[in-house]
Length: 263
Image (cartoon, rainbow, N blue to C red; front, side, top):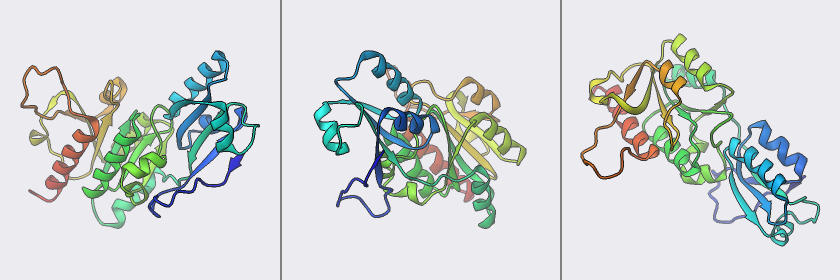
């Protein structure tokens, strides 16, 4: 079941509107389909078993999960038939991996892509999309499972960049990396224990992988990459061992842009 688009006069016209979907079966199918889900709403009257089930589905789909009073949920849905479950789903059009490579070819440039390996915070993904656009990347690749999609929150956090840079949502990130390498793209991941980007050749056809906020890139992703880059840190033993993922992405993408310009 769908409700009309959520009205908001403050939303930029470039943003993609969100649609409310409610009911156990529609929301289950939405979450399993891997389409963009911004927020999963669970009524406080739901039984623990149902909450546990939908919480697991929501986390896998990269949704923000909120418990709300049943009365509020009924007001949002405009019907008592919501079954205690609703989700804000962003309507977006994802690109194919090949589309990103075609975009580079159309500009006569070597491919410059960003891959997100399990980014869970929509604000981080939005910031990465913004930096990718401003630094000249031809597109961003995200996994269908295990990371947030391009939701309304991501659109807003990206300041509209998400509507201007192609985003491919692939079923298997590891296979996407293999495909890029077969096409002559060198793939590097940002992680601890790697080389400084200043000592790494980041010119030409290149893809940068940014890992999840908690654990970085997966072991398989790191193994498949051609190299690992690590940002230097001036601080000593301060209790913080890494940059925020979107901050690190911004620094590295700017560096790659400068390398591609021959600076």
